Image 1: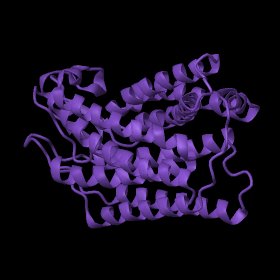
Image 2: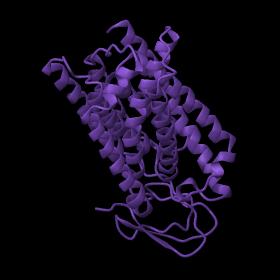
Image 3: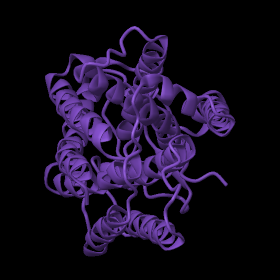
Length: 344
């Protein structure tokens, strides 16, 4: 491993520790905010008044800064998979602090995720040498990446405008899908900004190029969208499930975007590419294992009725917060709600 990749590796590990912790801290803040007003899942913004939520936000920002610097020194296909460590941190902390039980098979799933990440890291390509933001811009406007960007935007709009209002609070893939797809564009923009800053500090000023500011605006927009829908996902679903699924999808889309834009796999042997793909499949296997073996959340209230079927549950409304066996739900004031957990 080169010194540049090693620096990126260390920073990515530090980043994962902070980001994994931020999931738990932010969710505690969301839970406190939900007691006094509408939850984030139904458009409430009371969490902005919760100091604990802001502590989680600061923790996440520190982690993202470390991640930002890591992308300057190492390719995305090396840095992104190391996010598996955040799964371990968030799952373990959720087990002890949020009482979201993590079974032994779930722990095995976390270890499998780390194993897959290790395989990818060992076969990661070297970082492409870039001398100006204009070079990055040429990579961003090549037809293949423009097609990827257009597809990502189209799918995101479909999820936001059609799926989110109908299935967002019952299907975990809606909110996380939005975060992951937009996240891949965030990483590409952030990497471009990081390289521009690095070159500027080295004496080659990149601030006056309009491309630098376009990448900056894209990054800010994407980050805002990610945070909004990540809050909704955390407020609706078990943290131990949100973290690994978000990680798996985010990693997949980021590796795909980076491979298209920066041609990460150009010049690599077939064996190395296959090994990286096997590593990613290993990560997905661990994610599925963690998701399928989690223990249901404890019930908060005695008037929560037993589900009528595996896919339909009833909730008797009052002013207190309700919690489903599988995921968190928002409090409502009237009548019962029929909620389907899975839409096919």
